[in-house]
Image (cartoon, rainbow, N blue to C red; front, top):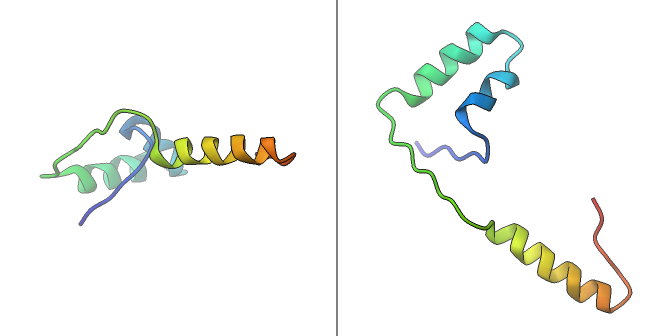
Length: 64
């Protein structure tokens, strides 16, 4: 199974209302897991910023 997230493991506990359930879920997910941390610029965010710059030149823009 491959599971991806843009959140650190320490942030995952906030997802669950019950901290015990969050801790148990984390324990099961990472048992015998290989954790790959990819650092650097976000490909999708970089493309969005480039698109937004092009749109601004045309009088449009993407807003959050």
